[in-house]
Length: 239
Image (cartoon, rainbow, N blue to C red; front, side, top):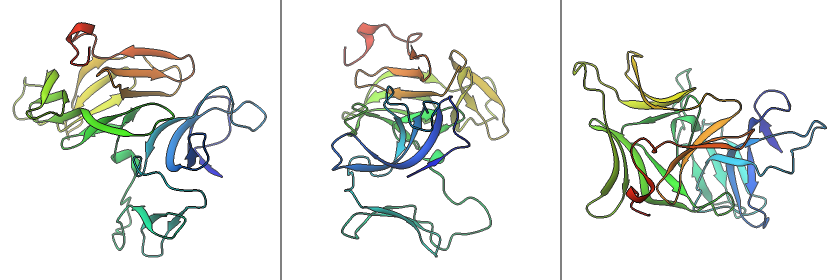
């Protein structure tokens, strides 16, 4: 069973549930993009695209469970009853949202999702190999947006300086909006960082093992290298 965003339509939509990569031995609790075929079934011609998961490097086994505890914690338990992951939200209720996956990007950004200072976007190997590799990362700090190889010291291969036209305004995060990856301040002031073709369906962006940050449009298979204005192919550290 899956939890579906809204009603079944022929357009791509988001779902949440246990997801396997084909061998039926390893599962993730994940959020993924799916498409229905018009008769109530998930279309077989498109592999669902995972955009968030819990414990991606340590998949769980069949018959694992996801439980919402009475204390307010969302807990993922493996088949032997051991806790594989939790939101750590026990006794944190204050009549407001206390946790959402949207605030914790791992290897993907979707429309309206933010990457904040202190967070890192990492790369995953492929749709069927879930291993998260922290060797190449995308991050934000007070100086700008950085893509780098996590060596010692880090090897930065893309740096986009943060907005400097008004030093009194802090821009603590970038957000994937329809048409751009943009800087945002807490006062909602924004500044375009990277222009992106507007969405025709569900869009997401991911770091590849080659160091490219790529935006994908689900419906038509369109993709765009978002670092093309900064680098040519020979400039990437993995070239």
